[in-house]
Length: 188
Image (cartoon, rainbow, N blue to C red):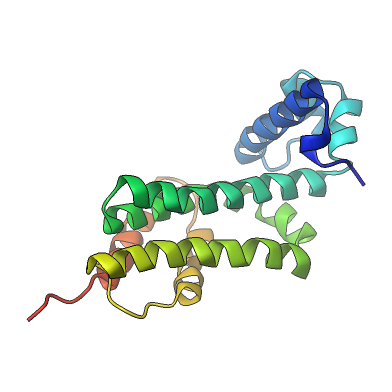
């Protein structure tokens, strides 16, 4: 098992971060990008890449974990900076962006997913959605009682929308529909 990233030397942490950044871009552009091509693009030798990520699945999984953590961290930041409905929509927009990235590596991700990994990422995502919903409920702009798990399930359409311009247009339309359906009814 590899040491946790925080226990690595500074140069090893930099290499690991660079590999992940390059891999995210490379796999988004070409889901079949080889690990050797990713190492070359990151400016490291194949041995360095394999020391951090012993196989393709480990690399894809770490990219996914980072993206989930970024989504979880984004929720309170958006709530602090924007009105609740705008915060929710911006969060959904970011989720859609990650959905487009995930679309390109979906097969590789599904091959390495297991119950443990799903449990590690599912709860925090539900929690982030819950934070956004509660902020909107408290402000009176999101209807009461929307279940965060239901909403996450509904947002699954993001992974089924085809890539490209037409898919992005459809995603925008569907996100508008979802956000509109969450609005609190006007008070009498």
